[in-house]
Length: 109
Length: 116
Image (cartoon, rainbow over all chains, first blue to last red):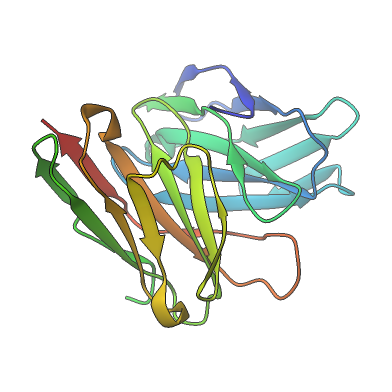
């Protein structure tokens, strides 16, 4: 069973718009990570934020972490058709990652 | 290509048959993970190895499932007496960790199992 919740389940946006998705979890964490998965493929790591960090940027990605609310958000700015994929948050407080159910993002040209 | 490789990519089998999946991790990685993913869901943890030692197995891993990582290199995941509910994508991932915690996982492309 999934340990995390992601919101929304699906998101459809126009190319050039921003996409925001949220993740909530239930336990204390060491770090939280975001992964992307294209249909039928493996997962690709996007960004990792540690529990003592509040915000992190990587290219067009911005991740925030609020440990008091046990939540994180991923913002993709200036979306492109190639950003169409499923996005998963994953968190850990030990030796393994627990994944959310994911947000499916469709970017329309 | 020095990424994580999985074989086969697709497997169709009849209920009751045994299947085996192989994962070759990135060579310098000491940790290897198996996850299972069904359609529309995120990956679910099955088991993990630190070098050749299997340190944790999920309750999802019934007695029909067995995983090995001989010599701390490649790993195999065997499913005996397959059931239709075993149909899923089986994902392997590896990482390098020197102490506790976990950083980025490198995933293979997965092995998709269909049980008829």
